[in-house]
Image (cartoon, rainbow, N blue to C red; front, side, top):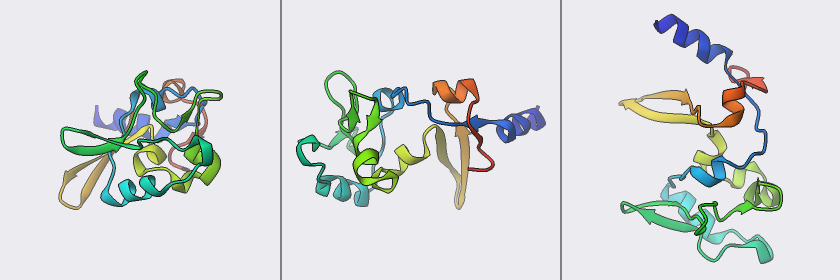
Length: 131
């Protein structure tokens, strides 16, 4: 069974299809450095008033009342941070989605693909091994 899981992971592909679902359902946890960076971001008139929220005492990217991330451009379902500042302006959780990285043992991490992402379900794009 383990070998089939490894084969699946090796053959998994991902290429964003720009559906915006991750920006509607995914709550991105923030490091202290990311909190400060987001508070300083200037996107001109598109800059959200509130960029950080707390859930269970921990900082996350804020969402609008309708569930959308505050950085989601509703016109094209793209991230305003990415469009205006490039991918490096995005928090790590946004950059790695649909990968889910978890600390499992000291000094080790586990990585899995979130299958609630339509692009991951469709297995389209570049193989993850190349990315």
